[in-house]
Length: 406
Length: 129
Image 1: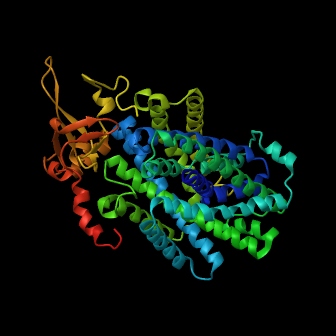
Image 2 (image 1 turned 120 degrees about the horizontal axis):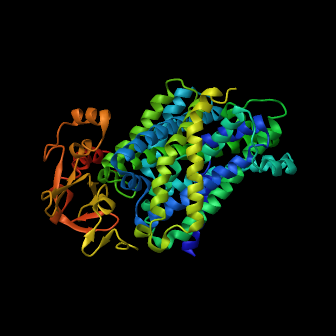
Image 3 (image 1 turned 45 degrees about the vertical axis):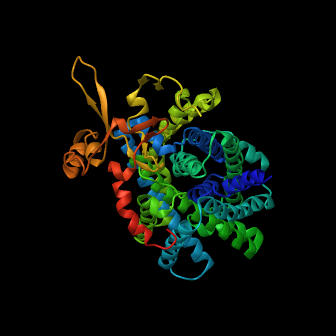
């Protein structure tokens, strides 16, 4: 019974932990500009992150190796180093965007300057990571993140045009570069690489073994499945409220407004608290991912399950990530812009992250009977090809569309 | 757990590049203490080669980066100086090779994880560490 409860709690945390500022920004904007047309891109992205999260969790449970261990081991030192640099740049941009997002949400809740809230946000998150154990962090932010279901309620409240929803789930090619910029953004926002770094390291933190493979699969299917529902709800709400009026929701305030319009002040408050948990949780995940990556690449002791004094370089690294992100957020860059850049650049770090995971997950030498079946390997290769395609087109599209600004 | 399956590692044969190079080192207490940055092979052309040591450290790693960035990095780190930016762990210290390379001694005694040992007292001053 206790074991069942543990599993349930873990899954609930996974549901709440899926969305971050990138998902909020890209899904709302995509809905406001293209209505229901991009719902299919959510499915493509979520299936991809599901496939690779399942694989990296399984590899970690069976071999005790998190992703960056595998990257260095399979790619070797030089290619591994290239992957490390790319992923750390993306991680830092991600933490910066999330810290900025936390400050903006706090500003919407209370009246005080951005810089004060960015500082409080960064310091608050450092204290939270320092004080709470790994499982505690995941749960607190996961549970409060469930408040984002208010967007599902909002979408249902307005009565979605179900035939348009059905139509949006069918992929469609258009000749507009803005359309393709948002296709890539929506897919990439779901595929953010810090999620697999964090997830696989978490499996080692929680001492998973082969007996936890069922939990791994359930986590991924239920967690990301519901994550897809939340992402689609955001897009649908924007299609209902913003597309007809031509509102461009380029701020987090417009995201929260989508819950205020149907449900008033209460809706706004619930949405803001949910966003705060989702964005704050993502800042923690991404800064820990930065520390996991560096420690695993260089062989340092790491993990929240170690005392801070026993993994000092790991500890100093995640603190530095949050402080550096705070400093970057204070330069006056728009957090929504940083979000878009981090999401689009993340696509470039993805192929080198996922290739070694796929190579080791299908390798019976390491994985024995838990190696990939035919479905996982086929999906893995399909997504690898897709991601390489996205990586090649992402930067030109970013420049051509002026980061979605038209 | 498939610790010893397949062609990577049997009784009398180890695929060094596949199962040892770039793997995680852990000491006798289970502490992570660096990576297998390089291997020292002893012998000559035409004769048998023997693995005599695991090499660890920034001085060793720098030599593995190719091209101009590699040369730049090597100038910064300097050539390998044993006991300083490079450590030599005799192969006899290897206890077991699974998904990680387990060593018989403690990290301190092998000169490994020096950075963590150095910074530990600093972090230990903070409450709750």
